Image (tube, rainbow, N blue to C red):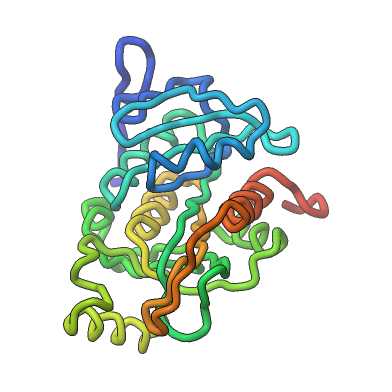
Length: 249
């Protein structure tokens, strides 16, 4: 039986968790984990307006080069991401790209690079409430093609998991786990992408994930993210969502 999700709203029409109502959000949305960062990215929109703030979900809507676009925080971890994807689907959202600063493992990706997720290892448990692990967490290929045309040069496998303190270069056990995933070709560690990709696929919502590499666990290198890097991350994802290429996308 296919998954059924029920639309729950407050008396004012706002979604039960997101707080945003029909007509307040664009069909294309950029998601990021930290609600404190949303105003920084919203500054790159034209005519941005804060339309909702409820729990960890802060939403601004404006436009990017003439196309309506919203930016919303989804909180840290896969459970709040799952809530966000479901409620965005109820609001008529069609495409989402998660943007965030993430650590890399291995030697290919260095701080400052952008990497899009071809797919994600389902190391978290929220998505398993929806479907067993035989179901893949993969990015929408149309969005991936547009990210590549927007300037993304690196595509790799992400790993999403629930407990950051268990996969950290600061402990011996953490280093062993990271080395294991590196040996299997994982390149980026995050906390939300796999749940987003799985649930979006189930709900027939197009989704992709784009990371700005802020540090490399393998080399020990790190980056103090400045506005230039943040703006590049935003613009790359926004172009992929809003611009169309050659009539076929």
